[in-house]
Length: 271
Ligand code: KIV
Image (cartoon, rainbow, N blue to C red; front, side, top):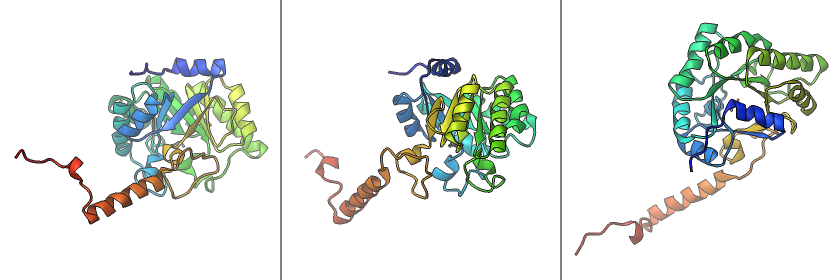
């Protein structure tokens, strides 16, 4: 049975009622179908697809066209989950006009329900303009992978008093600018809990402790399909890679031995 579409009001209500929000990444039709059927509230078509699907070393090279291609597949597969398209590096920083135009592509061409973009207080104007155009925006603070070089690498953010204060300010500025939700990546749990308490909009954590309003993980990490590295915050719920390798090795062996296809996979002519 098809699910009713999750709305921003549903997500807000979950926060108010103290019910946890679930978010999972998906980048293709079959995964989106599974995530949707699992009843996950929101799907993030993350620019992490650059690494886990396209084999880039970081999310930086991901293009708008690549994002749109994957978002289209996801929105064909998921009818219930609220779908968020991740704006890639330099698709929203160059000018406000360009940011609104690119955000619009996620909605008009790829049928996403909203967009996500990385950055703190300095992105408030961009968020405001996209929201003014009628496009829901999820913000993303803390460790922002697109600008990890500026942060001197993939490090936990907000560990000292000054950077913690800056993150609280960013979260509040982004809420004021109209963001409907905020992802917090790699920040200490007590800071994430404070921001969650102080904001009216839901917070989604990844490496931000258990007191956020919800959690997100990268699908390939959760199912063991990305073997290059595993961050501390990842919990692998199933390890598919060895199982898939085993199935492929068996297929190869059976073709080479001549035991596949067997009679049950073969069409025969009437005598
Ligand atoms: O691109 C992505 O998948 C993300 C999540 C890690 C939050 O931004």
